Length: 387
View 1 (spheres, helix red, strand yellow):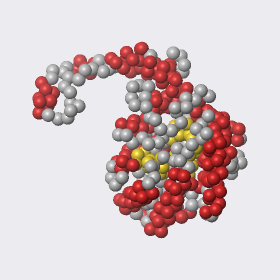
View 2 (cartoon, rainbow, N blue to C red):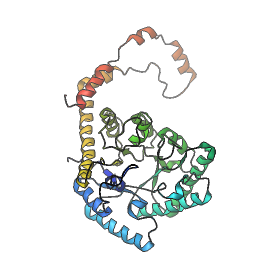
View 3 (tube, rainbow, N blue to C red):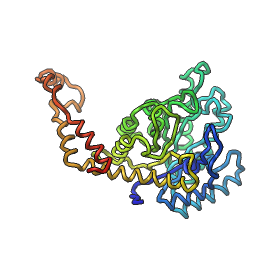
View 4 (spheres, one colour):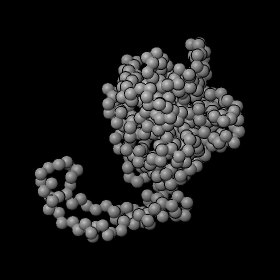
C-alpha cells in the first residue's frame, strides 16, 4: 500500500465482518470479533472503523455488558491507531421495525426508534464519531394503501428535528448524514435518491447540521448517474460522508469491492472527490460499504479490503495524470469561451437588453465539434495505463 495518510480510508464492522450469509444460504465465514477487526484494519493501513450500534453491542445487552464491550473496543482502537469517524443505528433488523422505524404508523415503534437512536448516538460520540448516518432501511412500503406518504415524511422530519435537538442539549458536535436508497429491503423506500434527500433537508429545523451520505450501489441500482448526485451534494456543501462500493445496474444491492464494476464511473467519482479537475477536494473519510464475495474465507476478506483501498489510490493517480495531460487540458480549454454577457450577478434590465442585442449564429455554433470523442478516448487510455 502507498496510503496517503491525508486520506482516511474506513470500513464498517458490518463490511469486513460480513460472514457471507445471504437470503439463500448460511454463513460461509466465522463471525469476527470487533476488536480483532480493528486490529486487522490497522495492519492493512485503514485508519477508520464505523459501526451500527448492534455491530458492537448486541441487542438487549445489559449496561455492564455494554460498558465492558465498549472499553475493550476503545482500547483496541487506541492500540491499532484506528479512529471511529462515523456511527449509525440499526433500525431495520429487529422485528419491531418490520413496517419502518421513524415512519411507522405506530407511535410505540417511533418512540422505541428514537430511544434506540439516542443510545446509539451516545455510543458513537463516546467512540469519537463526528458524523452520524441515517439509512432508512425499513422506512418504506410494499403497499402504499398503508399510509399517506405525507404522514411518513412528517414523522421522519419530526425524528430528525428531535435528534438534532437532543445533540444540542447534550453538547454533541455531531453532523447527520441521510442515506438514500430506492428499494430493498422494502419494496419502495421513502426519500429514494440523493436529490430527494437534499430537498428534504431544506425542510428541517436544523438543516445546517444535516447533509447526505450517498452510496454508489444505491443510486446505481436505479440506473442513476452517481457522479452527478455526488457533485450536486458537493456543490451545495452537503456531502458529509460517502459510501464507496460497486454495483451493476438493475441488480439487488451487491455491495461489491470498490472499482470491481464500471471502472469509468469509479474513475470519474475519484476524480471528483480528489478535485484533480480543479474543483474543491472532498476532505471526509473514504468509507467502503462493501463486502467480500461469498466465495472467500477470512483471508479473502482482508484481500478484499486491501483491494478497495488500492483501487482508490490507483484511480486517484490516474485522475491526476489525466488532468495534467496537456492534450486533455487543451481539449477542455477549447470548450470554454468568454462570457458574452455576465449573468452571474443575476437579472438586470441592462443584462437582458445586452442578451437581446447579441448576434449569435446558431447554425454555425451548432456545427462546431467539441472533441468529446477524443477526450473520452484519452480518459480510457489513462484509465488503462496507456498514457
